[in-house]
Length: 79
Image (tube, rainbow, N blue to C red):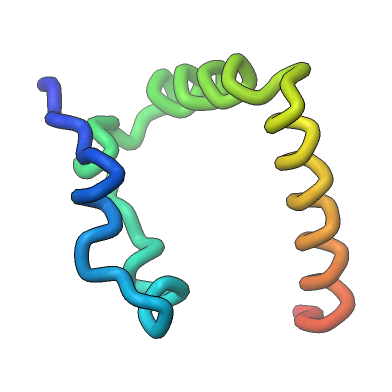
């Protein structure tokens, strides 16, 4: 089953500076992504993520941001 991908404008509809970080906006269902919850879809998604970012300036930046964010969260929001 193929789902129409939302445009950036559609994704940002209704988002304001006050709501941009609301948890409910971050929640996305498998159906909204056009995926099913399966090992096959997981592996395909991981492979695509790697192809988008591996060895690119954006990928390097993302890796640094994720590392920094994880370290900050561990320090300030320990479990």
